[in-house]
Image 1 (cartoon, helix red, strand yellow):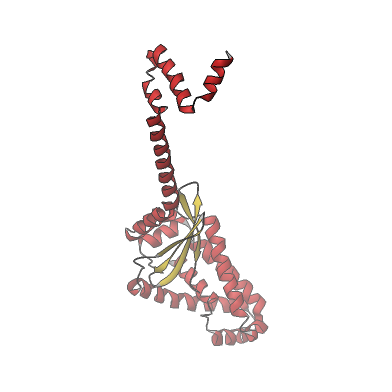
Image 2 (spheres, one colour):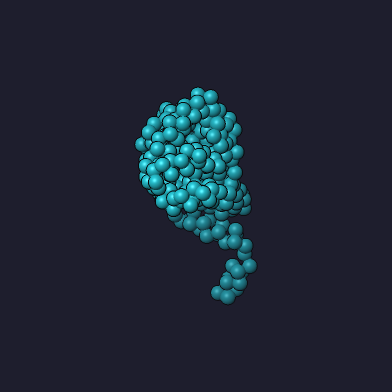
Length: 264
């Protein structure tokens, strides 16, 4: 018994498997075990190692290449005016607050450059502007509106006009001279002043949007890059406007748009 044990101990793993499955192959023909026997012979083990390595390489390639394929799908959907596909790829719970924060922070920075406006009604003006920004973002960043915008290739509607106006306000494109005069004339009635400015800016932005849709170009080859193992960015121009889209891994190979960085 001891002699047999020591003999078995000296055998290689491959030989042990060969003896085991050779025995099973002889006494269990119903199980059709020659295939299993092959897998554990020397050639079979080499084949299995190569197969495992190949599967690992394929898995890594699919995992690493998945955001590029997602970007390719988004580009094709945009070119085909397939708004539903792009709308479904957006995580609205992350995109909306991000855009709101971008615009409100930008407006705060703009206001800090104009102490006279701040003195005449800066706090109330900031509150009114932030309220308008929130309303504009909530109205524009919806599945229905995104689908409509892509399907029409950026043609302005009420929601996009309001978002464009919010971006213009935050980006220091307000007529400050007119704003100060209105604040004085309206004796600090910020709501009336803001409504007047909003209307002027929306009309101006609507005209600019129409011009950009007609003349603005899209990037043929947007810049694609990882920003982390689960983070990927697409940078380029959409109708002449520079945009950066950030995607986040959703599962192993799926990706969702979680941020859209607006032009400054």
